[in-house]
Length: 129
Image (tube, rainbow, N blue to C red; front, side, top):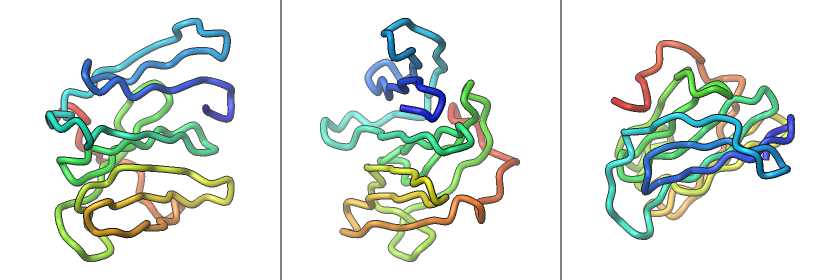
């Protein structure tokens, strides 16, 4: 649930993110054709930060996408690996009120903490790439 009271849903099988009001009324959606994995366990997760940016994982693509609240691509980051700038199955995501992004990197058996303010927003690869 975003700070403005909207519910974001990672609709993995339909490769889209949907947004609803807390009253259940549909608000908007955008496609995410980058979700190619067929695993029953490696589905994407999402979170929304205090500025209403949406972070969502592509577990089998080893990356995180960042969009604005309407789906406009802002940034993507990550690659396969074990160092602190890489992932090996990023699944759970959480944005804290103090500006941190937490990423559960399942296959590396760790949780990474990333300072949102240190992420360079812009020059993103679109989530459909």
